[in-house]
Length: 438
Picture 1 (cartoon, rainbow, N blue to C red):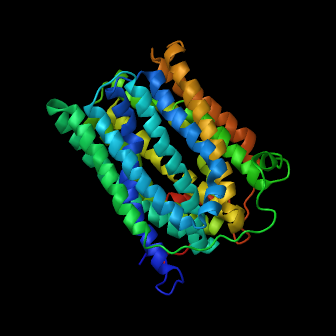
Picture 2 (cartoon, rainbow, N blue to C red; picture 1 turned 180 degrees about the vertical axis):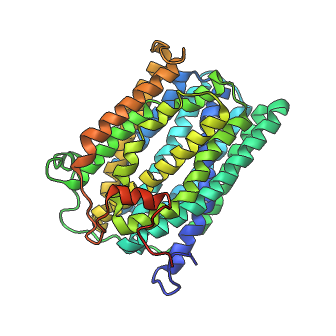
Picture 3 (cartoon, one colour; picture 1 turned 30 degrees about the horizontal axis):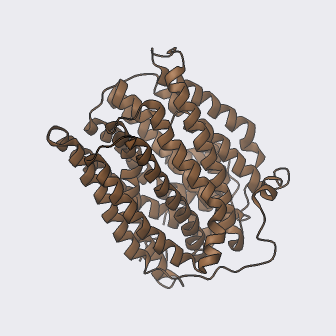
């Protein structure tokens, strides 16, 4: 039983299965998200190639969102789609695990192609999973449930990351290729486990109503009138600005600061730890004040994150910066997802989630591609480093995105409590809670 919900909840069995499924899935994603770049560098990728490793899979994954609703409608079941896609990923992950052990011409191109296939399936799974699980829950239950689930998954991801860092550090002197192979084989085993747990969930038939099959361009044309479309474009602008720099923090640490794999892992444990400790807190606040309030408060601080990297190269300082980053992004990402569930009716949710992921995937592609070019061609103005100059540019663009677009969308939940941003901040940091503890 999940701790946030009563035993009598009508979908308790499915929510418990989803909660448990998130544990091995989080281990898989934590390793994939944090160690694909080191594997790419091991295979000989340049900074610009790392940009393509991030950009191209995300672009193809986002384009695939155009077909999410059609695929679900064709298969007739969201759960059937999720289970089949999960086991397809098992095959892809085992193939990726083989790559460190073999060498052939244009290997990095085939590596990017495999990662692209994985990202396509991941994006589709994310969209369909969010549509199904949000249907299990009432709007006022989502913050606590998804926040608690994210916290449990975060602990699992933290354990996976720690194991990965220790494993790669140990194998660096023996066989780096063997270390990467074992690590990514472990992700495949994690996905097998999550796939079997997913089979314990129940399917809810997706009701088809007239007017839900709107095209992508019709969706975009609603910018002036649709609160949700304004929200999507706001997040997209912030996504582009963030991904100008996001793929290159790993390159900066491994290539310019010469951190070991273990130090690299420790630095990423910080934000993971901060995120998992904060998810439940963000979820509880979102259930009270609504998601939009927290989204706007956290996005005001997002521009500071790359700028803080320019103050020092000390690993202790950077770990603290990354913990702050994990805390801020934890609130933003959790509430952005929940805002979509609140703003979109169930029958439109797969399509709208698909369009949301499509637009953001294109922005990841553009940001990472442009950032990859700039990382090799910018003048090294800041700290004699092109990548540090890129961090500065990313911070500036994040500020612009926030101030131009954050005020254009509003909260949709009618039960949201009106709270001043100052009081919300004091409650978040634990000085003056806005809710009574039970």
